[in-house]
Image (cartoon, rainbow over all chains, first blue to last red; front, side, top):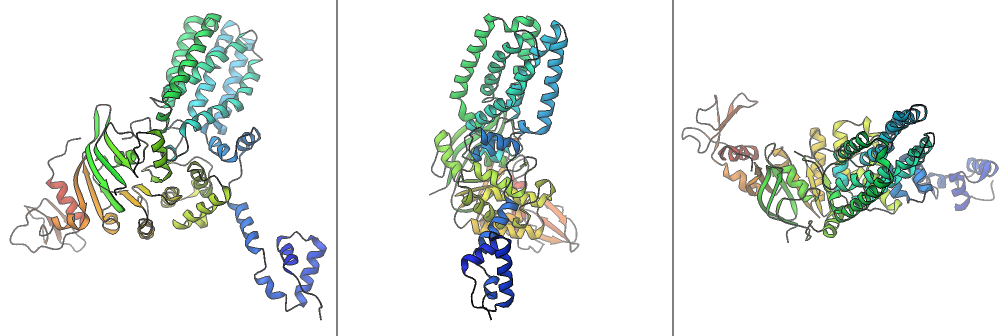
Length: 264
Length: 286
């Protein structure tokens, strides 16, 4: 006849599987012979916590790679979730972006003057398209439900734009180093201006419409001025546009929380 | 005090008017919004949900004016909204989607948020599917999932646009019992084409036609308007405003007034709605 009994701590460790193989085997052996302890196994202490952990393991969404990267960059877990849902982080978009940039870089590296112009034409539009995709109604299927929540849409748009730039810009910059000449750096000025202009225009029209309009304008500028589109004189104009657009965005930020299209 | 008060509210999209001069006050309980396609029900719900600004008029939702950004956020904190069409971001599980919306509804403490997500999934009978990918759900299950996010946080105002679309009869009855329970503590506005839903759930009904309110009152009051205007016959009656063959093989006729030589029957809400619609002058958009 056994002379000892399992206490709650020993039973909890056994239920949680934290008591090690030898102690666990000892508990199991004891349960086989002790009629007093066996009833405790029917409802052992800590079982609810174990079930809760199992349920959490099964139910809770695991952070995606993008979420983990954003958390590593200092974003809080909730913000990282909201940002990572952005369509801009989907594989298809990232793959398309990489292919497009590779094509532009190849044209810029091995091509002639025309190849570099092609890079200048495409590179600034990449962040513009990414930012617009990040919160356009056409690409965000749950937009209407999201708009009716208290989470600031302005904050959402800025966070998604920032996250896209932080995660995507190194790729674009890496590719740009392959392009000879100053264009590999100067394209950043119109890219920044166009991005802020798109954000500001999105307080009136849908982001994809805003980005399409801005892209058309940029194509017009490059096709008429060529490399002159990034001359020193125009860099100041881009900076001025970016500042003016930022002011407009700040003033009209509350309009980002409204549906920007005719819903009927 | 009314949870929702609209005064002279209008909404136009470009030159096309969708709502015109809407003035209603909605208190606690369930109010049904009925009307044909294009009557402006969804536009009205979007305005109440603060996702669309009215072109004219004033609105008070839960004591706040949504025109003011700070007040709008306050409204959204107390709001549950089920849009008519809701998509789901790709790759989400059932639990993940509701959890994502809970994050947007400022449920920041993760343990409490997960408990709340489980609570609403239980309410719509989706707890057993919580780990399933949304793309694997049926249409009815997706609709219940969309409803689950609207129920997060026990809202004071619940706006539901076509909540029973795609649900089978059992699910519809289950949903009605959930809504009846929820309505004990909040104001529910329900837009629907289904007069059965209104009859089963709503104390009050607002009927919209071409962007204008053409009836606002109690459900029994609307039904009473059709008393003596519904009769059965063996053939469509030539004087009837509407007439259709029922499952018994007899024809249900609606007319105002009913001819003297017929035996009238008790009207349903659907009869009353149809009579009201037929009695309206041919509606032009507002």
